[in-house]
Image (cartoon, rainbow, N blue to C red; front, top):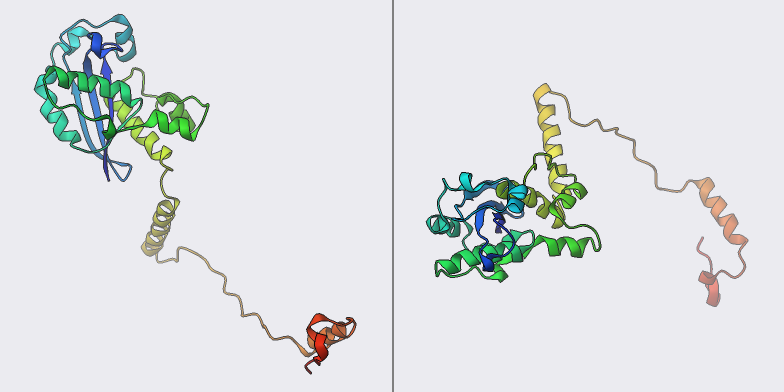
Length: 236
């Protein structure tokens, strides 16, 4: 199943009152594992950059002025996501900004039903625990040391790893099969077997005469055993 893990950066928190999209990052995943295909685009918001937003992502008005406006990248973005489910950390926020940009262009909005909210997934899986992307990276031992600023593509790449873990992680059988195949391959290279197996002689399963005599003696000590009820006689 093709899905798109998506993140955005913006000039603030409220697209209705003039905040704009400034960066989009997307990572394609297939069966919950990243394929290596990505979409990344800085966007000129055509407005100033508030200090609070700059402190989060480090994208200045001057830097963004050299990039295209959303109108010029909308088709490429929509073509990349297609109708695939969009995996987003706090989906309402990012979808709100994407759809605000599309409304400005009088384009069809992306339905919320197309999104998968990983914040909600994390809160269902770990009730009461922190559900931020950083907290989930720590929980799943995902290296986010390069995350000095929030960046849409980097955050989408980290979220793709978090999403895999939220869905249950890699199947253990896959890693075991890979390890076994690697062991066999290594054994084939040097001519030695990959595993050393001790062959034991078969164990006898027929009781000895001594064991049968001991069993008969024990049975004789029982008073009215249930299998002899009703007048049945003991087999010789």
